[in-house]
Structures are given as structure tokens and as C-alpha cells.
Length: 530
Image 1: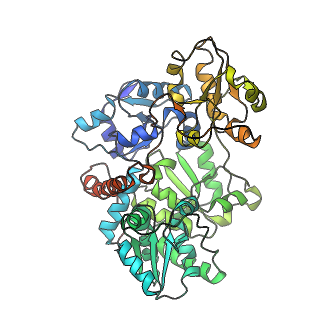
Image 2: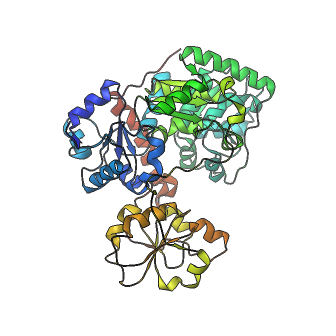
Image 3: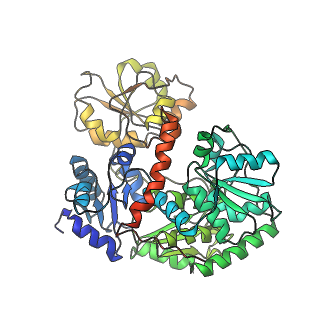
């Protein structure tokens, strides 16, 4: 290891050592998903770095290895991380390709570790599953069956299996009894593809639920590929558990805690370690959005349990960090912990709810933490003034391309923030620049990037698109004027032009992950079989 870069051999030893470290890929999400990358690489797009780094890295001195394409983007990400105080950030010499040169596998896709883990669980636990046609036949025969959609409520609302009920993954053991009070009722867990169906079904089985339990093989994609109708705009949600159901769920969670050796930590000790910086500690509230906003422990990040398992790398970047989970019911925290332990996160604890001072709970949505805005004095343009003079500005929208397509200022061009400085020269000269983003924060960061590098006057739309919409100002929708091929988001199969081909390719990718991880020396999944 030198002062700025490490070799692939050094990184391999670090990953196997049990020490804290993080590997990040600074490419945009879409580019990351189609580019070969390390299994343990967390996608941290340079465009979003200041928005995500503060929560991904609880300690600023943790070793961070930047491992993208081995190009200028990697170097820019390293420079920015060090500017923000992440003193132990280094480059991987040669980027991701150097890892492959050691004969170690590289992966494509998104949330790869969690997806691979789902396949590992199905294989190792022989999780029972049924096909879309078999489920359809059960419904038509009048058999008692409850279909629980283990995705987020928003995903469920967009598209789901007809008759299914939104029951996000960590909620299954807590709420299933309110949907199926008869132990002969068959429980089927579905998601979009495979992972959350498998983990959800196996959660119910591990918890000792007496009902027949199945994962819906290939989820809503499999249902759609079989030619069955998809339901949209469903508002069905699993009800709150009764006192009796809650007691049963707690007893099941106690057994899971003992089986998976899940410890507890008092609030005072948790906060002592958080404040001391002696360890990287993540504190997650794994309940629903509504419960989180009603009151959550200070410094807790909202991470619904099912999503924390399904997309662990969205929340946890530092390997071998301590993870603390909170659910005063004592069910969702334990179920989530059981899966994180098996994924290789050895130090997972639950926060002892009785030690949390109710008066200290914080209400409201997740507070944003943004790095790098200290000392930035942007020039602001109120929406009403901008609307009167739109034709005077070169308007650049830094939102996600999905958000841009859903509505942007008339005439606005789109690009990712990491390309903003390079985009200035080709623009028509002389006109001031107006930067736009969803809530103006990303645009303010963009202002800091370019205000000192151009002779143009640069402005930020105050309040961003959120305020523009609130004031009822004009919008354009559709593809608009992207200044480069959009690569900022993983293209979901349902969004692809050839949806059938994309769904088949995606499902094939998921299934194929099992063989790759079984031969990976740095992957340490560990199933606790009954």
C-alpha cells in the first residue's frame, strides 16, 4: 500500500482480514450495473457522493478503496473523498480490471451481494416455491391461499399479483396471522423477481409458522411471463397485529434470537460507541415509514428490514462494521438480524427497546445530511422570477433522468452532475446558467463545482423542482434534451423496451449468481440450518 493506491492483492488480504474497510464504485448506477465490478463494491456515484457518504461511512478514518473503471472518474472520487475528510481513502491500482487479472470474479448487476444471497438461501435451505401457473390454479380452485407482497408499499401499488396484500419482508412474521388465522391456509410470498420472495418465505419457515409456505417462483415477472394479468394501484396492506398475534410473533422472534445468537445492546452503550468513533456503527430503524416518522431514536436511519436485506449495499458500505437494529416490538429487528448474520455481517445487535428514552425520540422524516456545502454561497433565483425569464438562461437539470422525464422546466437540458464542468464549453456562449434539481441541494453542489470555472453567471433555482411544482409553474414531460446517454439508474426489466426479453435476462442473471459466489474466496455466507 502506498499513500494513494493499493494493489488488488492488498485489497484481497484486507477483505479476508476481518478489519473494517469499504470498496466503492464511483460510476453512475446504470453504468455500474452493466460494468464488471467487485462483488463487495458499493455503488457511490460521484454525482451523489456528498449526499450519500455521510451515512455510508460513520467514521471518516475508515479505509475506503475506490474501485471503478480505473480511470479519471476514480481519481476525481478519491480527491473529493479526501477533500471531505475521508483521510484513508485510496485508489485500487488499475481499478476493477486489476481484480479480474488476479483470476477473481467480477460481477454485473445491482445489489449483487443481496441477490446472490437469495439464491444461496434457496439452494441451501431448499426453500419451497410454486410457479405462476400453480398459484393461478390454486386461486381458481378456491383453495385457501394468502399472497403476501414482500416489496415496499410503493412497488406493490405500481404492479402486483391480483389479490396480494402488501406485507414488506420484515413485517411478514409480525403480521401474517392477521391475514391467515387458519394454519391450513397456504401462504405465498411474492416480489418482483426472486430474492425477497425467497427470503420472505424462508423467514416464515424459520420462524416456525405452521402454515404451508411457498415463494412465488420468479415473482411478478414470472407471473407476467406466464401471461397472467398484473394488478395496478392496489392499496391493500396487512393490518396491524392484534395483541394475541403480537405475542405469538414475539415468541417466534425469541426462538430466532436464540437460534441465530443475536445479542442486544443498551441505548447508552450504543450512543457511547457512536460518539467515540472507535467503531463504525450503523443504527437502523427497521419499521415502516409511518412508525419511523412518528418517533425514532436519534441518529437512526430508516431502513425497512426487508429492504436492508434486499439492498444491503444501499445502506452499509463498511465491511465488519457494527450494525444495530431497532424495533420496539422485538420482531422485525430480530428477523432482519438473522439474515444479516447469515450474509456475513458478524456484528449485528438489536437495540434494547426498554433502554430507549421515549422523550428522546425524534419525529418526522429522515433528516438530510449533506457534506461539502460549508462556505458555499450560491446565487439563488426564485421560481416566479425564473419563469418570467426562462428564455434568457441555459437551464441544466441535475435530477435523475426518471425525474427529469416526469417533469422539467421548459427547455431544460439534462445531465449528471459529474459531467457538468465538461458540459459548459459546448453550450452557446454568453447566457447565464440556471441549475435545477429536485430540492435544490444537488444544484447547490453543482454550483460549487462550476461557479469559479466559468465566466457565465451561475444561478440555482431556489426550492428546486419541488417548489416549482408547488407554485404551479409550467412543465415539459418526456425524453427532453439529455446531453449524454442516460446512465444514472439501473434499468428495471419493467422499464425496458423489450420487457419480456429483459425479464428473462434478469431472472437468468439472478439464478446464475449462485455458481459464481460458491467459488469466490471472499464471500462468506453462512446459513444456520435447523
